Amino acid sequence: MSIPSCEDFSRVAKSSGLRSETIFETPAGPLLKLANGSSCHKPAVLISAGIHGDEPAPVIALLNLLNDGFFSSENFDWQIYPILNPTGLRKGTRENAEGIDLNRDFLDTQSPEILAYKTSLEVVKDSIVMSLNLHEDWEAKGFYLYALSPDNAREYGEAILNSIGAIGPIENSENVDGHPSNNGLILPLEFVNDDSLSDGWPEAIHLYRTSPHIHFTMESPSCLPTDTRADLHIQAVKTVINLIGSID
Ligand SMILES: [Zn+2]
Image (cartoon, rainbow, N blue to C red; front, side):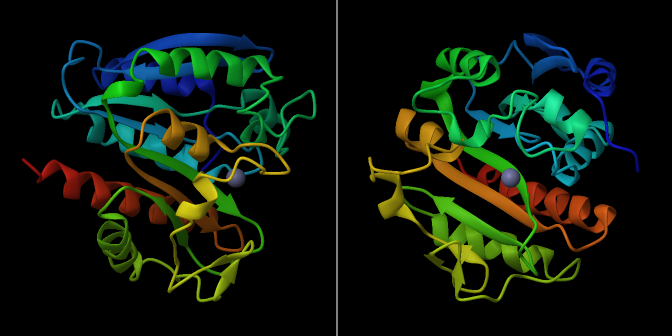
């Protein structure tokens, strides 16, 4: 499947009952937020992808979920940012066109993309019950998760990983990027409170510190075929949304 464009998301959002809002215009297209709008008193679920332009599978996964009507559920106030780095996605680079790694730009923000994103988050931050950041990892051999949560992180994380086992491998390294990993699950809560992150705050830390909630960063291994990586993300998102959907 070819890499989706911002225009693809605008078009599909309309037929899925979501409203698309341009929060910033880039030379490669609009930075879009898709939302169902009228349900602002419902719990908000934030899903983002494409902050690294060389990681297309999560973007494809979100377009497929939209096409399948997954976000037509009225149970949540959906806050979906399908391509946070349009210029990077067009060029196939991790960074944006100005060479900034947007996922390290959340503390002393330099890029207009992340400035617009942070501003957009202000209106919804207090009602977020779950956020999911979808990524790929070029060094991984299997799918894995970073989980940040006051509770449920292990339970939900294990459920996600169990659900994807039939689609692709789970990362079995005991150490991923310096974090202890247990069968694909990393619980780096000490990292959240570390003010000395040397190479800048990622999105996950910004989201979690703005308002603690259940957060997963989902990483698929770039060595697998694109469709498989997208399928891993689709299954992982479905599993965890169904889990919180069943909570009263
Ligand atoms: Zn990434």
